[in-house]
Amino acid sequence: MNDIVLNFYGFSRYPFLKNISCKNHFISESYKQAQGFLGLGIRSEDIMLVSGEVGIGKSAALRSFYSSVDTNTYLPVYIRGTNLSSTDLYKLLLEAMQIMPPHFGDKAKRLYFKAVAEMSKKPVAIIDDAQELKDSAIDGLKAMVNFDCDSKNKITFILSGQPELIQRIKLAQFYSLRQRIKLSFAMQAMTLEETCRYIDHHTRICDNPNSIFSDSAKSAIFKRSRGIARIINSICYNAIAYGAANKLEIIDSSNLVFGALIDD
Image 1 (cartoon, rainbow, N blue to C red):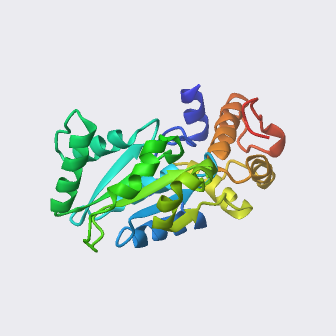
Image 2: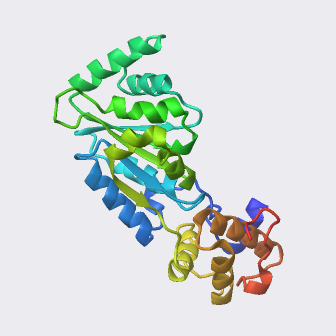
Image 3: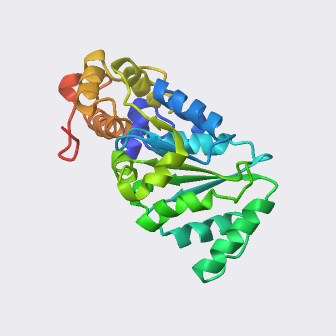
């Protein structure tokens, strides 16, 4: 099927996949604002928060930011938050600093504080899917940025997660952590106009300069996807497979096939 699609539409590779280089990301207004927010915050903030609905483009924005960080000044670290405890975080950060973490959590914690205090580059720890962190990890973050009386910011954590992360941090047990988060940013879905440009962008970076989706198709895709990138990708991925199989040079709204797993 891939060869049929590539040959029919003249693509150099299959569009609407997530594994594209950061230089080819579509720059929506929310994506651009997230980059500016993160760039500002790493200079002085202990903990920042980026939130947004599933599939809205948080990970893409984080990957782009990660690749743009000045590595002469910062040590960027990317961590998946899935089921991690505070001890896991200490050990992963030590590994990122090229330090073999000790087995026991208390020793890892002591070594972490020593290592971060002596670092010539400031660690910037991006924790994606932070809503999946264990309570001990969320609660432990306030200790991980506390370097006694030193007023200089030693490390920055960027927590990225779904709206449920916000709800967890609002719990009474995380009150002191919440006080440390002064900067937070909620990513928004794309507008209709951005969705139209996003669709054309993804076919263009695969070397087809022509718009293969009609205006009515783009409007229908926006309505069904609510401007959420992951859903747009899924609809368009199915649409070009159907279009190539049926030799449709232009995909119209009547040609869209919404799979059973596409959100209503």
